[in-house]
Amino acid sequence: MSLNKSMHPRNRYKDKPPDFAYLASKYPEFQEHVHTNLSGRAVVNFKEPEAVRALTCTLLKEDFGLSIEIPLERLIPTVPLRLNYIHWVEDLVDGQKQRRRGIDIGTGASCIYPLLGATMNSWFFLATEVDDICFDYATRNVKQNHLSDLVKVVKVPQKTLLMDALKEETEIVYDFCMCNPPFFANQLEANGVNSRNARRPPPSSVNTGGVTEIMAEGGELEFVKRIIHDSLQLKKRLRWYSCMLGKKCSLTPLKEELRKQGVPKVTHTEFCQGRTMRWALAWSFYDDVIVPSPPSKKRKLDRARKPLSFTLPHVAVKELQAKARALGCTSRHPLKAITTLVEKTLTDLRVLHKRVPCREHEQSLLLTAVENTWLHGRQKRREQMRQLRELPRADHNAAAAATTMPSLTQDTQVDADQKSANPEVTAESPSVEGRKVTDIADEVDQELPEQVADVETKPRCDPAGTCGQKDASEMPSKQPASPLSVERFLFKCLLNVLHEESDAVIEIHWVEGQNKDLMNQLCTFLRNTLLKAVSKS
Ligand code: SAH
Image (cartoon, rainbow, N blue to C red; front, side, top):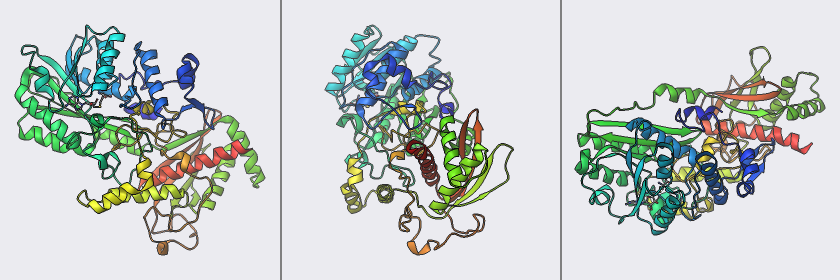
């Protein structure tokens, strides 16, 4: 699946996302959380923390032979993204080849990094934790996996990071430290106010994190700055210092801080699957370390160019042909029949469309969306909320108003980025994400939006429902003749209908416009409409 191309090349889930159906057949406790979606695929509802936890525990058991326990009220780690960070640390310390010694700052109840690092690479770990519950679970998880020789969990006071943890061991040089820092600066940020770009869809997810897990004074920025300051004293006691970041905007000020302090070696990377993004920063005071290059811009461009797509399985294609015939489509060609149905939906939605020349055995439509007629009322409110979140932080009134909106207070969350590794979770499992600031991975068909379940398949013609893009007065009263002739539009895209063996695939390529999330929504709407038409018959 395309999203996995951006995983670390050694990540075992890169070309082989978890097979939910197989795992469900093998692990009864996981089976309880697996459902079958409209296309007959096994899916997991990532809104349920129990389901996320079951998946994490199942993957750790199946793929690493690890048995862990995690309380629902603490952060639930997700395996594929945690693996990305481990592999990047391997790159930093050349750690696949030799035993390495590392520190995990804030190991969590799962103790996931030390357990993975010790199991995969026989690394030694000093794992620190401030929270009593996390400390107890982490200690137990190490013991029950017989890894006490490699992993030592220590309880530390809140104010300390590296310095106190190392004060008893004055001699040992550590190869690295890693850290998934507490994330939010305060409750507002934890609730999503000011934390996201207004153009991105909000995660609808569950928050199982305890206070010290998800909130630190000053958020991740201050937390990492404190690690930087400890590192300025410890210098060569560690070969590499590293931190994961949940917000891209943390990267620049932290790199600037390192530059100001004259730290000689600095690098960063990004971990991404679908729309789940994390960043990581590493620095070293050694001259002889290998410095992995940051991700190239080309990869980013490639990602931006990648179309959205979804598959209509063979059985669905047959039924859609029958539907098209009922609508008067005389062609026996399945792709033409599907195109007729797509055209009908677009007409109902008042999305302008026109057939355009294309390759043999394909159908192509150029679409111009002038108004948003596909968005559910609840989603529209969320869009408005998102705009509120853009207000400057100092504006307390607005922020307070935002927190009283029901859609926000309902938005709780869990860290469930293993969703990122599975291409089949998105449509039925709107989202789970431990770190509010980032988007949720939508791996099915790469970038379908997370609120699929909320997108109604009945067109709505509420002119005010424009995601705040335009006034009602700006809306066209009737459809212009050609998608090429309109001057004001939300976006343009190219929709291709093609064969993939006996299935049909719909690909939607971005052409231009205001915001790709709107195209994501339309893509989901089309997919739901076509699949619903099949499930009803
Ligand atoms: N590493 C785990 C947990 C990350 S959440 C994972 O990736 O899933 C951050 C953790 O840091 C929480 O468990 C929190 O209790 C802990 N923490 C917060 N402040 C800390 C500090 N000063 N020192 C050590 N741990 C801390």
